[in-house]
Image (cartoon, rainbow over all chains, first blue to last red):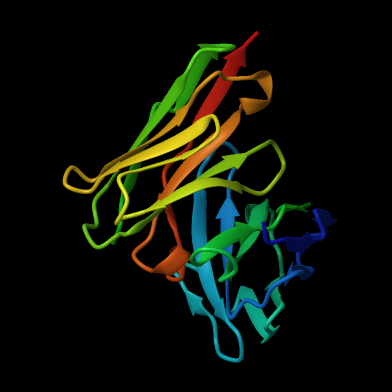
Length: 117
Length: 114
């Protein structure tokens, strides 16, 4: 299947600093990528939809100035958590839509565990 | 918006037995229903999906059924093995492959007892 690479897999940062997470589609082009957040033992919650060459669409309750999304190319989207605080600690997962094979499908990255001290 | 309910939250079965996980959805316009397996500390992995024009799909030990009238779909795993232990999520979407983002169920922690 299609491969989505997400880096870093784990990051620890101090409160007030910013953290950038990268999501790359390795063997396909993705005009649309998605960013999810997952708390321990809970489901994935969609944060925003990232469209190549345009502004991201944020879900209700997600601060766009807090979670900056840049989808500069068809294979790369980045999520920057600005001025991170302990409550931002979570597992962040990206996904990308692939049209390879019979119909479009969503494939997920391996996730980034963010811990803010 | 869409609401996906998933049951049970935890399922323990003996190795070799079958496991069934059920989901219901609320949006009749949803037409794409994937299932994901997530191991600890990793991202979800697509294991099987079904579109609304199909009632059943099978891939080796895994099968998914869809009842559009009742708005429910199920994952069936036969001859379970220890490596099947993981958290399984169902999801639903209106558009192709989830282009508007997937709505996930709360997940089922499947435990395969040796």
